[in-house]
Length: 164
Image (tube, rainbow, N blue to C red; front, side, top):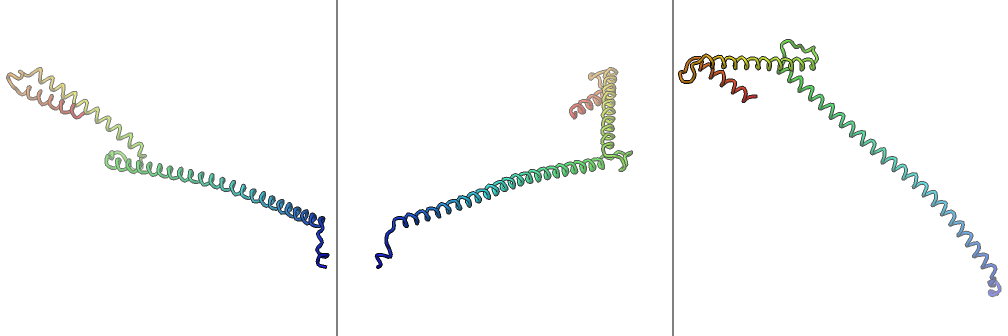
């Protein structure tokens, strides 16, 4: 009887194979669908990662700009402090703290230029004195006061030329 219960029916075996193949095809389709979803999630994640990288680079550039601006402002503040210290040291008597520092700088430049002009005029006068004494002197053969004045004037002019 047991032989009768398990008769080999070729059609049944073929049906089982078809069902098994159908199940396998469904499983493959499900896996392909799941793979597509995973790829989409990966694509979104990669785009977000790229966006984050771009945003991080933009933030880094902004930080670098801000630091450079801060350093530039600090440098300008240092220049301003140095200017104020220089003004204090070289303070013009007619300047008051209510004046703009740039006006003080112009005043100091003008005073410097005036002092240079006075120096140049004094050196020209000294040369004229030396020339006058040279013309009125008896010369080096017979030393006199005019020759000494000439020597002093010319020595002073030579020293001033070396300084310049």
